[in-house]
Length: 303
Image (cartoon, rainbow, N blue to C red):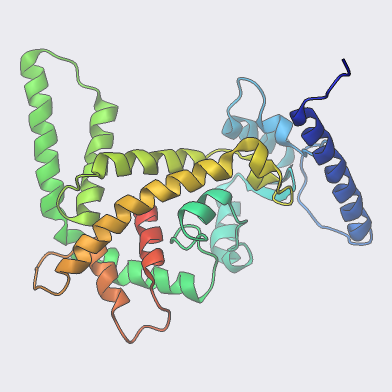
């Protein structure tokens, strides 16, 4: 019987060949270009500095702190195909985020917000431009104004009172209280009521899916670190996982938006996040249209 190499081995070998060819081509293209980059640790071929951040038993932010002691408050790292600059001091952070913020405002396209937030159209990941400025204006005027925040005070007071009552009941019964879980539930409930009004029948499932999305977005993923390597989607399964999650989120949020749209304009005094976004969508004077997909993306970001 002839030996048949596993499909995964063949796929990885072909990816490696493609990888090497691409890197060789990039080196030829940039050979005559002088890059003025901050100092940084020595980089390995292909993966750059990923081996230093993925070391066993070491937290990435601890590694970055230790490296900054050696290379300074402005340090360059190569994360796969992504070139990154790490800022490790308040003064340097002010230069980057305030003095020269427009030079650093753009961010790489990540697969998680691209799929879950309709092409990164939520507030946090939207590319800088007219749409982002319009979203920021909506947040500043409609969602985060002093009047709007104060309008949710009764929700905060009600949920805090419930939490205190729950803790008191546990104390009287002599049972333990998981403080972290209790406060996490408190914040989630307040945000959910501010966004949707009364408690949604799908609230627990929605919060579970959004928590999963945050965890996926917060970690390192090969798809984001090697964006030119499209076949990685098939190997990691990340794209399929996110698309399934996106489909489940859509069903829940679509149902919530439809219910709010059916009640819109019937004279209800208290507006929540969904009501505000539906009202803004119907405003004829705005320059940038707000679609249902944009509303869904904003809800994902706010939750």
